[in-house]
Amino acid sequence: MIRPRAIAAGVEAFAARTPTLPPATHTNSYALGGREVLLVEPATPYEDERLEWLAWARGLASRGRSIVAIAVTHHHADHVGGARFFAAELGVPIWAHAEAAPRLRDVPIARRLSDREVVRLDGPAPTALRVLHTPGHAPDHLCFFDEAEGVLVCGDMVAGVGTILIDPRDGDMAEYLAQLERLAALGARVALPAHGEPIDAPEALFRRYVAHRLGREQRVAAALEAPGAAGSGGDGGATLEELLPVAYADTAPHLWPIARLSLEAHLIKLEREGRAARREGRWRRAGAARG
Image 1: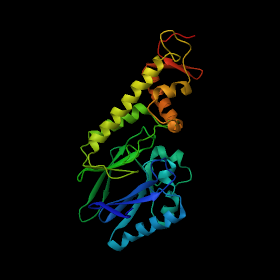
Image 2 (image 1 turned 180 degrees about the vertical axis):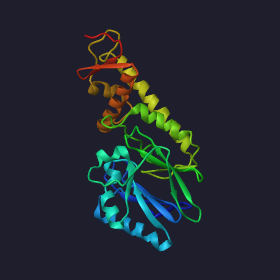
Image 3 (image 1 turned 180 degrees about the horizontal axis):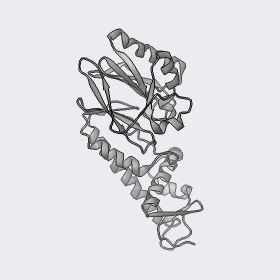
Image 4 (image 1 turned 30 degrees about the vertical axis):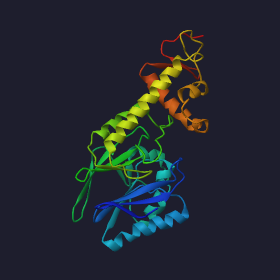
């Protein structure tokens, strides 16, 4: 693994080991800007990795680059594990969306970024980063788009390795799909995910993610029609555990604990659309007879 790694003019990446979900093992941090620099993703909680990360950040100064702030894309642990530590060591503020504040009570957020505002960074070629609030994976999720260069820092909206979990405890499947469509329409040249390699055809990947999720949604809807769930006879519906092997028959059983979360997120979306219903922990298609 090469680190730090130059991605484009004024863009560097540093992959640090984090407690993230497999198959990912690292979270990418990015230095954005030619002279003034915004550091995105203060991710790692591990001491050895923190020392390497700090050496990278401090090394920017030797090349005439000045860190103005650290930004977090969202509050998940594999993205903010070093936030407070790095901010204190470097003497810089932390920026995040307002929705991050109640979720990061021990992290001092100096600036609350909002959708569509522009962060301007001085330099030989000044950088203008458009802030995009992209909830769905997390309520506070942010992306940063350099419109002039076509570079999109996209956090956990997509990944260069594996897929993205929508956890119903703080995710929203419908919102996530809407935000993927929004990102696909940007015309970005390259997307820089938190996990994995740079994505050279981001529009195509965003649309594949949407197609994949809608395909899974069809499987979930079909599972509600299966015998023993909420078929034409109706037997009171089915639990998540009963629906899981039907809706995720193409997924290895050892991945089912994570798939269960996605299944619930899909069902909640179908429920809001009037296509599924639940009662006392059992799910059925909307309008199905109750046993």
